Length: 194
Image 1: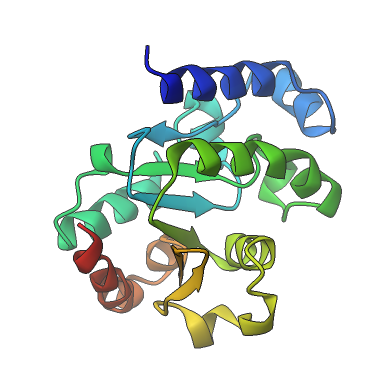
Image 2: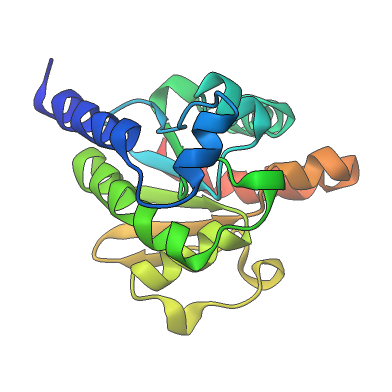
């Protein structure tokens, strides 16, 4: 096991034991799994969503439901193999009723995500959805560039050599298939990083 694998395993072990917020109780009550992340531990591109959905919490795999199928299609559109990227979420546990993350939950989970980014050392971070966009852009000192996702999706920002690219959440195309072409167009910015 290389150093990155070992450090990411330590994060996984910490998340499995974590009981800092009520999401742990919700996980246990529903026999859910934490959704830590999946993919290449040396990925150039990391995708970050908001929080696990029901399918993800049942399997422990990020983006494995309908939105995950759209994500796979979008990746395929720009010839990126899912095995070459890393996919994770801000929250590692599913919130009840798929509600928005609460500030204390984000604050408790964010250090795990920060460590994942530090270990993987991606060149590009793609945020999936408005919550992820807001948290990551603030974390990377880009709050002054923050706007509604409808205005900055598909645009590149930079922080200390890392490109930050806000993207719509793939679920947008699940709810409105007509939006898929717009998402594909946004994903085309990633071709230069492959």
